[in-house]
Length: 167
Image: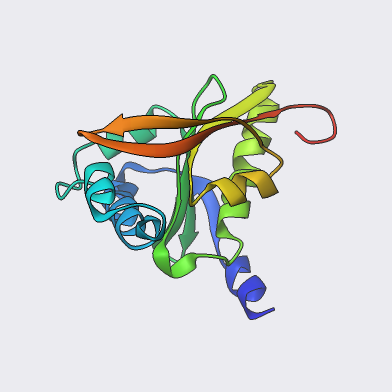
């Protein structure tokens, strides 16, 4: 119950360029401190390199529908929807895990997909994120091996097909 009340204070809104630094740090910390439970130290360092600006967060997040969970100025999570239905980055801050933040972000993404008449959402989910996407109604298409900066990872190609019932 306390987690539910806590997450109700969080506003889901579209990304603003001033969010870029918090998002870069959130991504880095989440991979290094949460995903480490399912991946090796070498894998998480390749996934989230020491240079947290390995990606131009402001540009990339601005080019997509990037939803952020804003807890009175603290970014609690974010998720990116591309025009073709790809959910690229989707991360919750290490201090906001299992509080409903991811569900709120996901529902905003799904509402935007409906509005855009996107009929298929898909993602490449980490071992860590797979249970969340399964709860959101995604199916596993295949387990796959991907490579980032010389390290090999397991993740899951997942999809959710839109119908009137589910989105």
